[in-house]
Length: 509
Length: 120
Image (cartoon, rainbow over all chains, first blue to last red; front, side, top):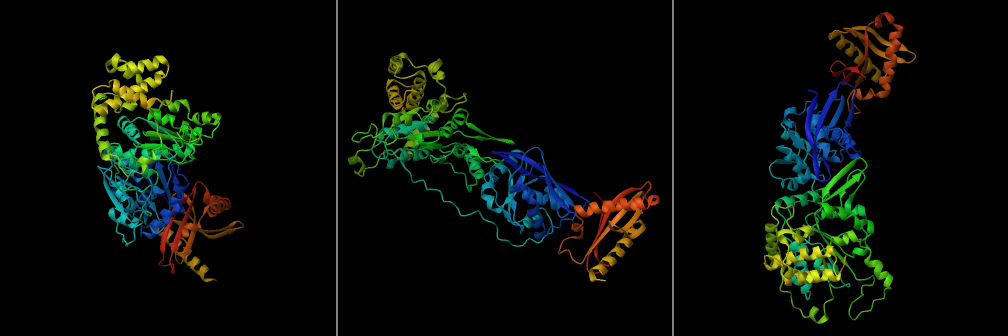
């Protein structure tokens, strides 16, 4: 037997493609070639596999070895193919039974001593294998917890190549090696951020709950120290917990970004890139491998841009495609990667560069031109997507020092958000939308959901006077529906519309 | 003669013995020209085989086959054609091919023998 086959997974974005790894020995002088569009790190597998095999006690014949990765036209990268190449090689050389490895997927990087090292992206890879109908996946010991999150597939973790060979029935001595562990854990911040810590900002807290309930994108503007960041950080705590499928998507992206994934985290992710971030940092980049950017890591969660006007305009406009479609495509020479990117956008900005414009008792030192330029850093199309525009004022000193706590805790708020989301989901059943923030405006202006003239009156008047545009009109309607859902009303009345108008009053876009 | 040459001679002897056992007819041994030396020339069926014999005491410094690299193979082909040109009658209507016999062991008589047929 001189040919053997097994399987591995190539990742483009979070999508895994099954790759058949074939090894063949021909009677030529010793040589080792990997073909099928390998990148540099995969080409270097030659040395790792050769040494790992001999150190694991697997005899590799001194012949010409050709390893083919098929489909040959798909670019493959990374060291995760090492194990599959080594196993196919050993089987082709007769050290392993070829039938045993035929329908097993192997993922992992080899050390020269034959130990298995963890690789990024194990979760999406195992997920792809399970979806393709494979029943057994062998992965490095350090990735065991991550791979075990995927249901419907038998996952075997191994510490060394020798152990994998023994699993397949080879007669090798499995020496007791110390398994390679993941590097020191970054302990996640415990969920100690509670809405009750926010004092004296009842309006802002209410707006935050409305944003959470309707999935509305939100802009917080106010002077420094008003608590914009504090508010935004508490949003994941009141968003509904992710279900298993969503949590798996989030975990797959984390795995791809190289973060250790040990369990499914049901709390919506919160990503706050620094304002110096380039568009590549937000979108994802890399010339051969597209690593997920901040936008992708915020999938199913919150993307918070503090000091929004300080971001590069290019970087901000990169948000437009994912806001529109819920996906982001990264194009590079040679490949295109597509990532999911459905997130809730929270922007924060000061009213002017010095931060004191419009603040009572403070003096703004900015020239008028600077204030205008500052506000115009956000492009119109991006502003169009922001439903709620909230002005946050500084808290009066007397309230800030009174030691009282807000009565609205995160748990209470999350309950209200859940109830409102259920009401909205029931209304939008059978449509592509599930939250009010996604619904297009004409849907709310026409048909069965058109509000009676009496309820619409203040909004219609505002439109006639020209204080709101038609686009803002739609947004007010969307917010009004969410306010009604929160209040348990069947449709928004004059009071809900009034609240919605208040939340929208800041910008006339 | 140095010890390595003694081992080399013994290895060639063993290889010739082995080839005869497999039905090869040995035509020439240690044929020299100004381009180098061919260890063994043999025929089997309709093939004219130019055989390089490599013997090593251990494979700690690499397997004998690893010594037959690209450059060595190219030289062997040149030698093969040179031999054919020098012996047109023997070479006529025979397919030319390159072979390597590798031996690993301190004693040629008991060394592990491997044989590669039809090198590129």
